[in-house]
Length: 93
Ligand code: FES
Image 1 (cartoon, rainbow, N blue to C red):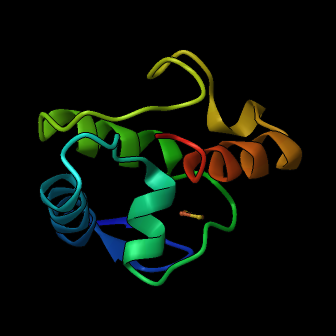
Image 2: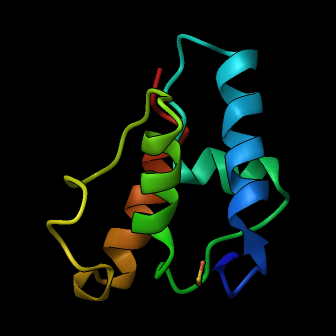
């Protein structure tokens, strides 16, 4: 199942990247941004942010996100907010 249509990323690839990141640095939260970077992809429209976070959460992996799951429509985020969400992923300890 394709989750990110902009980068043609499947649920399986995202889940595998999240799992690898969690194993490589267990004390560091896995974020959609880290998953994208691990897959060599760059977020474009941001429509997939919530599903990517859900995939990470459903895998039982510690994650962070700029807003609670399913309370803000990704369509409600401005481009600056989306950029900020991804910029913040590098600053998470
Ligand atoms: S669907 Fe993932 S960035 Fe557009």
